[in-house]
Image (cartoon, rainbow, N blue to C red; front, side, top):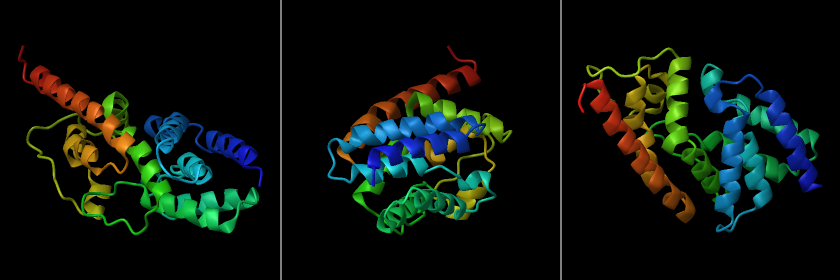
Length: 217
């Protein structure tokens, strides 16, 4: 296998496939996760080829845009990687990464784990917090036509996987139902360090948001 060529072909494939995707799950999201994954991998004992393929293909068909169907992403990834003559053991690994990377709610038990998944999962979660995470959160809330905030609707913690998938709660609730929980769910030393700073940024944002909402100085 010419790994460098396969990575380049994968980049081209993902860019083409995600053209016109929702702004928080588009090519630039993939690019940020890819870059984060390569950064984190520098201090982890991982197969960088698997890490790069998994990062590039992790959101090739996010289930939230396919009526909750979680089989489409792994299927598309498999078909593409087979066309590139990637070893089947690597294809299976990437499929498992795609199937298990998402948050899916607080009560979801991950069925597969590997050092490569841990790196990509951290890279993906880092893109869900901090300044970019806030922007993505409100972008998706607008995409789903959700209210910014409703003081009468409290965040629902410890949701089941189905409750999390089907939630139509205001966007601010998502901070408490997912974003503020991610800091303590990071896998790697590098991921945890970066997450700490981004977590503080989100806490400061929420303080400012509530002050402005309530008309306080």
